[in-house]
Length: 150
Image (cartoon, rainbow, N blue to C red; front, side, top):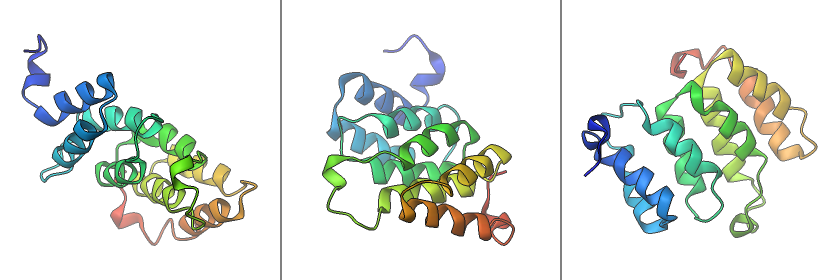
């Protein structure tokens, strides 16, 4: 039993932290499911999900990016920006850059000036797919304002 009373009140957060500490992909998948069930309180979940997004020992990166899009937490923007540039070996078959696209969508849906700035940087990437996804989100920034967290 945890000594942190807030942690015990959020089983998803407890399982997320434990799965990360043990590098347990199965528990991470369970925690991810719990962390995205409605209602989705961001609280401390989103930053822990951002840590999981950048961990290399699992194969749930696309699912985590999607969960972070749901959370729309500004604290996750730097991790999403770094992850959009990350190439995971297990995703090498995917020429469409689906993982980068999900990270870019998640950043756009956060909707902060920091997210906008990171998208502007990604729009200058050498990889034309990543740059194109970022440019599309920037081009639709104002149209999509209603879906943004900020």
